[in-house]
Image (cartoon, rainbow, N blue to C red; front, side, top):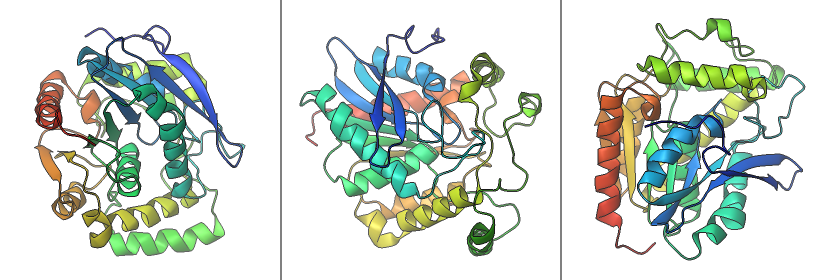
Length: 313
């Protein structure tokens, strides 16, 4: 499948939302003449709309229209700190408020009464699951791709990493988390990367950033990480997870070293309408993996959507 290099070339239209706190958030609409339904697409941390043009093409080929979001602090949406390479948010609730605003102001009117679907990767999958909890019955079904339920923290057990982050965030809230920093293309090498085993797609993302440096984002701040842990703990609470009754296909990457697959498995067991899709050979970015992995993923998506096609949200 050929992939467009810009939103406009892919047939998309850029729009902007202004949040209650004045932050401007970029989104893009990719319409369809006779839509089978409408997808809200939520990218992961450091990602941006242009990186999802291949995903949009996959959805449009299946008859769907889509709305894709640049999270605040990412892509071309407003960034909170002077160093625009810092991944920063005061609270993950701001992400969830922006998503709800986009749903109400853009996605729902575009759908015009037709079925709504969700697709989110990593941090986007996390916030999609939070949205499903807060808006029960709003989506016909949803796909969470390697959702951020917990993150890898090296040799530290989860409780220890949380304790350290919450202490350090009090004193250096806007500093980069160690072993991260500003985006540096020289360090972005395919060999040994934890994201994808597909060289062409890895290099394509890098070239998009080199062509438009405003898209670049480096590592997270301590405040971002603390807020992420707080939100992950909320999502993982058994009572909270049990209240997410929208049908969900949760794709878990077996070779993931960004987020913790075992935490995804536990969450899937807690959600009453969740189907777990294990992808043993996949790295974190399943959507940008090599073709055999992607084909297996999209076949599972097709089967899942067909199963819920006639249902009402």
